[in-house]
Length: 202
Ligand SMILES: [Zn+2]
Image (cartoon, rainbow, N blue to C red; front, side, top):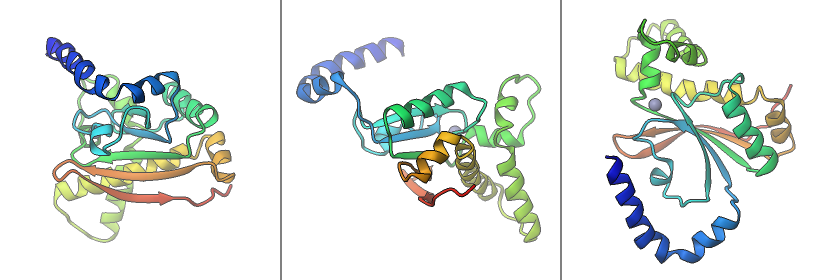
């Protein structure tokens, strides 16, 4: 597999890079991405492929379950850099159906040390969906329930984004919009679950 990757890079240099040399040389001088993508690490959700975008267009942060945790210095630095330095106007949080991270909200694995801690930032999405279903006296197939939790998790993480004061400031001055999407890998389609252009009010 590792050799395959390096062979692939050789083909990239000779086929793609060479053909679009001007584009890549210009790009090497500076990046001007216009979107920050916060997605899941899942190998089946490759942002540039599913959005048909090129290198240089999307600033990317991926983790298990596309989670925004305000005590996560990694994402916090990505956000600060994206908003205050790159001046990126749009942030997309993109979840996906069939997410192993979200499925793990229902599982208890005592051998795992870090995954449950990480998922603490997402349990509320499961709670909200289960409470709603209970309130409506609805019994739906497990897969459908899981899909609802995936969608709710995107909404929840958008809320977490707004806990950052500099995110709120950028939104209030209309420099920043937040968007919530879910990718359906069985058909390749992206569903918009939240368009969030409203100004945040304290
Ligand atoms: Zn996932």
